[in-house]
Every structure is written in structure tokens, then in C-alpha cells.
Length: 113
Image (cartoon, rainbow, N blue to C red; front, side, top):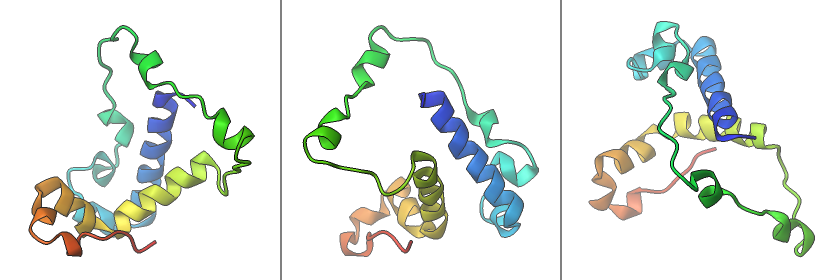
């Protein structure tokens, strides 16, 4: 999955959550989905940087081949669960954004889901 495809899955999931739960628009009024737009409107493209893709490319063979790792969930389902986790734990991520977690690190535990 490309970075763009991944971002679109997350945007579509957020859009879906706003459609199903009307209370989200009041909690997040600046979100495009609160105004019946797609979160994909927030996607912006930046100038390509040499070696950018190569820098972030990983080889995930080792966990599979040497350790026998098998994911319990698909990438798409994991992204859906991540969106759910962020919605359910708003105080956690807001404390990180505003820096207040530094005042009481013991209160900065995540997550409910």
C-alpha cells in the first residue's frame, strides 16, 4: 500500500465515522467531515525529495521468515481500529498535542480500546 493509499483509507474511515456518529461534528468542528466534506481535502502534496521513498522503505521479511510472525489483523482493519482508538481517547492525544502530559506523566496512559 502506498503512503497515499494509506492516507486515503484513514480519511475515508474518519468520514465514515462522522456519517455514523453525528456527535463527532460538535467535538471536531474544524474537521472537513463535520461539514459534509471529505477529509481527503486535507491531503497535500509536497515537492519530491531525492531518496525520499528509499529512505522510508523497509524490508519486513525478517519477522515473517525468521520469527514466524503472522499479523492478527489486516492493515486496513488495523487502521480502522487506530481511528477508533484516537476517537475514544481524545484527552490522551490532546495532552500530547498541547504538552500538558509533561505535567503529570502518570495520567498519560493510553488506551481504552
